[in-house]
Structures are given as C-alpha cells and as structure tokens.
Image 1 (cartoon, rainbow, N blue to C red):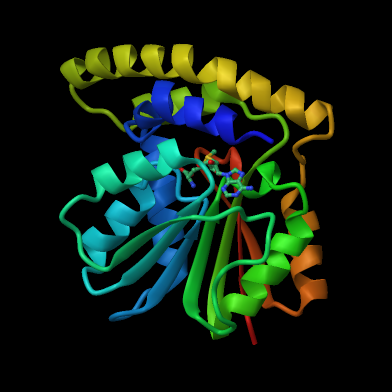
Image 2 (image 1 turned 135 degrees about the vertical axis):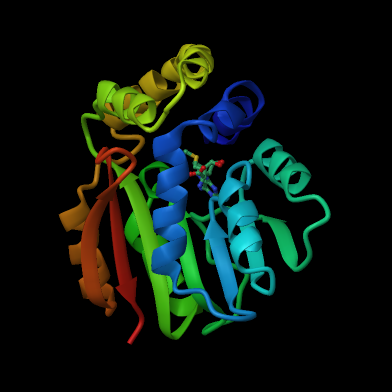
Length: 234
Ligand SMILES: C[S@@+](CC[C@H](N)C(=O)[O-])C[C@H]1O[C@@H](n2cnc3c(N)ncnc32)[C@H](O)[C@@H]1O
C-alpha cells in the first residue's frame, strides 16, 4: 500500500537523516549487537538508503550482505551509496510476504525502524526466525510511541565541539526537520488509523519469545527515543 510513500521519502528527505549524530550512534549500536565475524551473511531487512550496510562494510569488509526493501527508490539510493563495495546483493522484497530465502541462511538480521510499517509484524518476525541460522542474532529497532524531537536535537548539539560545527549543524538540523517532519507526521497518522503499529519493546519481546527466540533483551538508542531489541535463534 505504501510503497509510493517510501519512494517519496527516499527522494525528498532520507539522506539528511544520516548526518544526525543520534542516527549515526543508532547504526553503531546495531552493528555492535549484530556480532559480525569474518564472512558472516547478514540480512538488512528494510535497508532504506543503505547507510547501515555501508558502515557494516567499512568495519567488516568480508561480511556478505543481503539488502532488501520494497521501495525501488530506496534500493537505488542504497546501491549508489554502496557503489564499489563487494558482496552486497540488493533485492526488491516485500517483508509482508514469505521471504525468498532458504531456512537457516543468515548469521544475523537487522530490522531498523521498519517493523511498525509492516502489516503483520508477527508473521515477518516468524520469517526472520525461519531464515536465521541457529545461534543467529536478530536486532529490531522501533520508535517509542511519543518521540521527543528535542532530545534528538540536544543530543546532536552536545556532541559538537567548535562553534563552526554548531553553525553547520544548525542548518543541517533545520533542513532535516523541515523535510522529515511531514513524513513523521504522516507516519503518526497511519499509526492512529491502525495502518501502522505502535508496538512497544516489551510487546516485541513477547512475540519473539512465543516464536521461539531466546536471550531477548531491550535497550535504548537514538538519544533514548528508539528501543533496540535483540534476541537469538537457539
Ligand atoms: C523508516 S525507513 C528505515 C530504513 C532504514 N532501515 C533506516 O533505518 O535507515 C523504513 C523502510 O522500510 C521499508 N519498508 C516499509 N514497508 C516495507 C515492506 N512491506 N517490505 C519491505 N520494505 C518495507 C521502506 O521502504 C523504508 O525503506
């Protein structure tokens, strides 16, 4: 239903987000918890414009990555961002359908800020369980229901040292918020209409537990405005 919504998101606003410090820290937090080793095979489920993939490849050059998304515009931008990097396969996949992967394929799966937009999150999480290898890690990041944008802005500015960095950051934040706020508002509306879901970290943990995941834990990231949930396939 919302493929076009995400295509527009990719075209208009998406690249600015990667310049925001709390977003960069979220990517670092995800990579730390993925426990990547050697040529591990990683699924980025809902890869967006590919920032996570690029940073994974910088830190773990031998990792193999399957980057899936249902928005062609997102995939095009992700492919452009990762141009020249090896062992990345971009694929158009709807996460609301059975994944086109064999059981026990991946060492780890990252699903960053995607699950709320999937019609049947429990079905998708079951698919993740199927395609993960035993002992494989799943990382899910979801927004808290009422995101405090001020916390994100303050966190970003606190990380900057020189006045010049602060002036530059002011304009980056201004453009980012002007471009992103209409999309964020539209996501809020979809949640209120029941099209998207406002699942809590605890609710995700309960679903993961029922599916059979073990070692479930919750933390905070993105200036404490997102939950990061990690679990393992036994
Ligand atoms: C908020 S963005 C997150 C992108 C990226 N993971 C990040 O955090 O930067 C949500 C992504 O989920 C993708 N998406 C939404 N519903 C999807 C579906 N049913 N199947 C595949 N991808 C989907 C969108 O196209 C978009 O790229």
